[in-house]
Image (cartoon, rainbow, N blue to C red):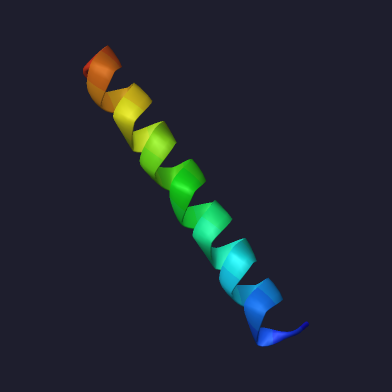
Length: 29
């Protein structure tokens, strides 16, 4: 993978994690 592709994958993973954490916070888990 190119560095830019790696950065894209990492960014997307972090975004998913943030979204999941936000949902869990709203649910009070």
